[in-house]
Length: 307
Image (cartoon, rainbow, N blue to C red):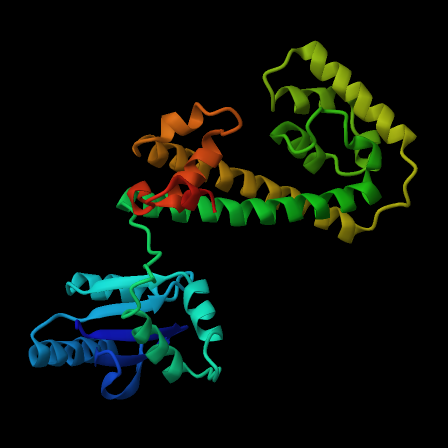
């Protein structure tokens, strides 16, 4: 049988256990850091086993999100077959044991033993370089979108205290025009101390609408300032509001740049246009599907894609 090393991966270090064949360990389990020197020693050890048995080892580990990626890349560059298992597979197999031992060395041994069970198949999906980049960009977009939504909620909370009637005047509250004008006139007091014509010019300079539209909106802002029932805002609230406006605009810029990069990467991957043609699937969702699913040939049945 082909030799195998099971690797229990954690942040910054891993535990390895080598089996020459089923139930035949090679030395004791060993720990190594995710450093150049330790990985070099790991490769030397694997080469020693290869020289002993005449066959290159297979490598079995759990997919850990991102901790395993550098290790996988290095091992693959040295020609090793790397099998990254869905964590649910070893977890289910571990539960079937009578003795439920949970240590790094036992986990590494358990992963190595799984290699000899024919019914278990690796869940590692193949991805092209473009798909890997798309996956990273899509996940960054999701993370920043979440932070952007939280920033919107915080901004709305401050605005409700400082200038509550401003919300719907310029249509979309989070448009560049609405945010820029509010940044300049953050409170009813700022509005009432300014000339209406000045507010109109501020609106007109930030959008492609007519002067009459800008004049109407400027008048509405002045009226909202007169009608606002607010406690006199303190300087800290005004500072916080302006900081949140800057943050929101930064998020908008980052998301726009990411979306453009995602669009460019997606358009180079076969199947993107076909996915976009499906009702209910837009460019963002199509890009996410392509990024996460990997090589569709890795699935031998359509039901496995749907799970």
